Amino acid sequence: MDEPPTERPLQPLLHEAVIALRAPAQAWSAADGSMGSEPVDGVYLGDIRVLSGFALTVDGRPAEHLLTAVVDASTVRVDGVLRRLDDPGTADPGVRLRLTRTARADGVDHRVELSSRRDIALRTAVRVELRADLSRMPDIKAGGGGTADPRPSATSGGAAWGGGPVTASLSSPGALITLDGSTISLEWQLTVPARGTAAVDFGLTVSDAAAVVSAASGPAPWSAPSAIELASADDRLVRWLHRALDDLDALRLVSDRAPDEQFLAAGAPWFFTLFGRDSLWAARLLLPLGAGLAASTLRALASMQGAATVIGTAEQPGKIMHELRRAAQSLAEGGATGEHDVELPPLYYGSVDATPLWICLLADAADAGMPDGEVRALLPNLEAALSWMRDFGDSDGDGLLEYIDESGHGLSNQGWKDSGDSVQWRDGTLAEGPIALCEVQAYGYQAAMRGAALLERFGVDGSSAPAEWRAWAARLQAAFLERFWIDDPDGAYPAIALDAHKR
Figure (cartoon, rainbow, N blue to C red):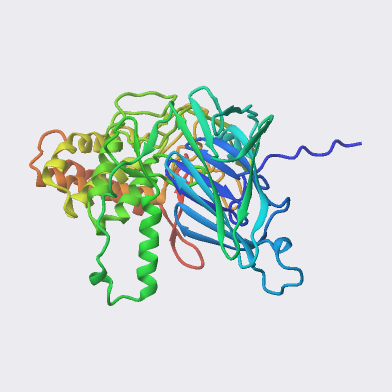
């Protein structure tokens, strides 16, 4: 008899999950506020999940869920009814529960509020069961789930657990605390006055001494449009804009290498850190609100610009980094030919597009009001980035920008389409590297032209004279026009990429 096929792990889906975040902390749950039914559920700080289970009951039962409101990026409110505590036979539920979850940069706070329209006081038990965790984000993303099983210890008014540089502490004033393995049970005897409300509060605080990113302090480095500027706009646009800026505000981080330079995290949950490409694009799209974020993002990335050739990290002189993590990551890239083991170092440079995009952002920020002194301070980084495109980005000297993983354990694809099977032929066969992506040629062309204009504007001469980079851009343009266009019965179109054989 044939053996049943081994079920391979899958990356968790997120489309039905509810999130509250304040970088670098995030909390994922079901719509009713519970955690533990889905693999992504839990509270995270950076790349470590510290809580994987959350269950709330009143009088021994969960509330009946009514609605979930995402108040803002950091706050989720869940409303339910407690009909078992109501007057018998009442048609309109009068005893309600509200759970408010608020993410902080170093953890998450909860408030459980009971309200009653009854004419008598209610005495009931509020119970919360939490499951402590110390699982790594890459393991959860890979579909393997958490394997950590910490044993919390009791503290004065709460509980604490940790492992290595990570510590988590729970504060639960007034609660009876019971510990059983990794489960923490909190219970309050709560009296809800007649036609009144009563609430309990508890909070989780997390620290990670090995963290490489942390919350940005101070105000957001952009200027929101004033009410007067938006007065004539559609009110839906105004609400959308305020919500979008609130979301972005909750993504602000700094790195340990440049603690004064803010940038935006690439995205929750898997990419809650500095990514060259993503952080550059976000800053570029926010330029209409000022050049402050662009300037700080440029400096944050310049502080990690490549200075040597290191195959294991994909570092090269002048190259802009791809991803920053607290520790190495072991991943498995799925593809049409199976799985490819990936081992990424904490600071990884495997990106073909971050370097030209850095140049493009510097040029755009200079046009958008970045002070000349700040631009001038980055001109050596600009020259190094331009030189990377010429000396390393074009690995085979054909005038195009390509990428290839030389280490054998890095990312197979190093553009924005960076999954293992993202660049393939119509029949599903994977493209063989070095691979030249269509859009990267455009980034390179714009970077060379805008970089030349900046050098000219600031009077930089010598080996990286503006004329040299305009000539380089012209050669790239000619190579693109010659090789990327494909004739088809439905019309000509550009290929998404060229493979190692320039097909």
